[in-house]
Image (cartoon, rainbow, N blue to C red; front, side, top):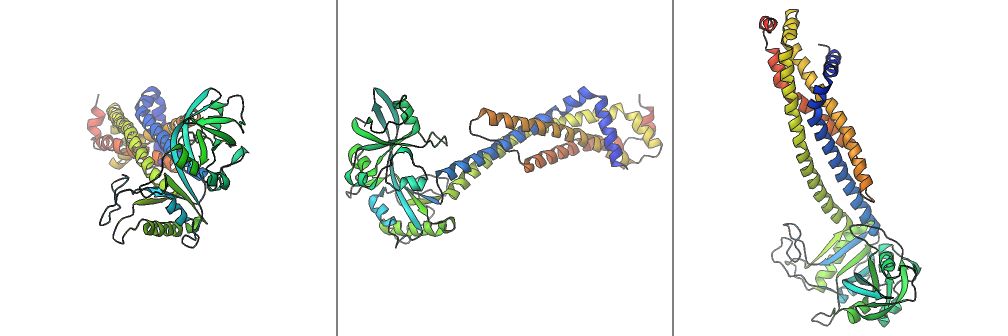
Amino acid sequence: MNILESIRVALRSLAANKLRSVLTMLGIIIGVGAVITLMAAGEGVQVYITEQFQGIGSNLLFIIPGTFNGGGGTMGGGMGGIRERPARPMTMSDVAALQDPLRVPDVVRVSPQMARSATLVAAGRQATTQVTGVTPDYAPVRNWFPVVGEFVSAQDIESRARVVVLGQTVVESLFPDNPYPVGEAVRINGIPFTVIGVMAEKGGSFADEDDIAFVPLTTMQARLFSARTASGDYSVSFILAEAVSEDRMDEAAEQIRAVLRDQHDIAFEDDDDFTVLSQSDILQTFSQITGVLTIFLGAIAGISLLVGGIGIMNIMLVSVTERTREIGLRKAVGARRRDVLWQFLIEAVTLAVVGGLIGIGLGAAGAQIVSMLVADFRSVVTPGAVLLATTVSALVGLASGLYPAWRASRLHPIDALRYE
């Protein structure tokens, strides 16, 4: 049997009943279009998340109090060891231990941070934003520096200076007519501070990173918020550590764990009361979440493919009925059962594939629309998604056309020729 000739006959049959063919393919078109759009959006989300985490800085390790249990991320639980330990705050003693190059040789910088929400007032204007206490190492660790003025210095840390570095969003809220308000006074929770710098614009990430204000960590702990622990040490919210290179990330993480376990007097058989996460760990978690979400949404969109397959089966059964005499004539002149079977199968597959190709075009257009509607977001249509959509379309056509084709092949030529 000539497959190319069968495809030509199938296309001619589709062209002869244009409206019916389009309506039959509608389920396939919508299903494939939705799957392509959702998969492109899912890929785009993964690319976006990766770019945002790369923008945070390179070779970073995040050290946070508490542990994630095996059940999915509850803080304060265990890691599956013999005993679970309650969350213990990170302190400046921990920071000092991690800054010792003899104990943690694969870490080049350590940046402790304490973050709280606070109200800033200046020139009669008010803004509620995140105030973060930092050390001078924060800027190089994050690769984020002031565009004007200076960042928090070691002298500011030692003297607990009441100085503040503002993000661009805070500047726009408090000083709309002065983009570089260095030297201006700002009150944070009623305490006067002096602006010493304005950070370069960082842009949007999961939140507006420019909606922030930086003060010396010691000032944050002693003047703005109470951060003393029961032992008399000062606590921090979390710690960022920069490894010497990407190749030494695992070694740096193990060194950090060893030091903190020693600092917290954790016995060998006990779990950690802290978590050390790398950027790749966080990206992997987000990728798993977005992957599951994409599959879930794709499965919902796949319902349209099922409906489209039923439509194809229905129209092929109608086609078999309409062309009964044609089938009888073909068998009378020598066509075998498998020839008739393949003819109708190819017609069903052609119908589905043409609908799938139209759906791919529609899905690509939908992905572009999503990119235009969402700022700083780019949907990614991958060759794998296109191949998957095409394959699924062909399989839907094959499955939908199998019964009608089998029914056509089973017709007796004499009965078919008598059919009215």
